[in-house]
Image 1: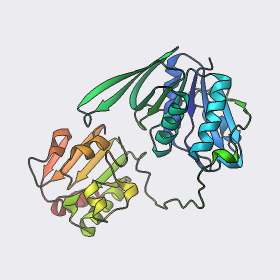
Image 2: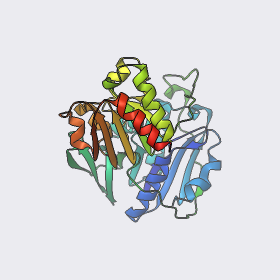
Image 3: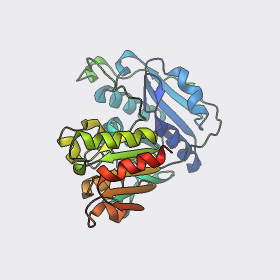
Image 4: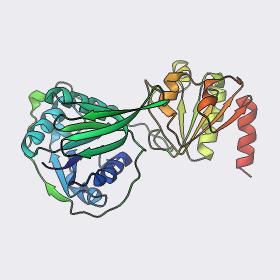
Length: 317
């Protein structure tokens, strides 16, 4: 079998950090590690993957892969798996990764472990650890179907450089126009000076306690001073104070930064599911019984409209 494949998360040549995390972890499995990348002009990215242990880079270039498209991507991957027979294929637990991996698993009638925070892969078997009950417990999921499929939570594995050959393999394009059942007419990336929510080392999130744009402005000021990203609970998103792309939680994005600051967030289980694996959690809330304090390393019982200005003043000294 062709070892472990890591599907590359990239757009216009910008590679997401989770790709390097997965490559670094896959090296521990003791088998050949390869990167798989679809797109336009992606062969030139091979040296980047080689730096993190990719012995081979399966690069498929065609206009049909310019933007992520479920039908085309699945058709191409099925053809490649049938030809090269990898032992395992890893995807990022992202919007695209979740969609791609689940559709692929259905097509191959294979098992799929999702949102893994630890992985052990050997010939014919993969054991993946995932958090359940909003991080209160861990479950081990064993996959024995072929190939082993899993999505990996961003930020849980360390990036370790380890030079490898990075030999480019160019499989035949198997996807056709018939596999494309929806088209992206236009893609407008969000322009922001802040880091991406999924990859930020610091995330400051605001909840219902922000009470409106004024409270959110304090959250943004604190995030900017710390060089972090801004997030929000469902309450702040539904109120229109922040965009849906910034929602942290079970139905939003899962983040695990070095520092997560929750301002005015009570800590519903759905929100905890999206941030409880952060390295350090600091919370500001007026309610001493708020569930967020149960997962916090540091808590302040107080009004965020008083606490954050004091914190900003201290940080600026």
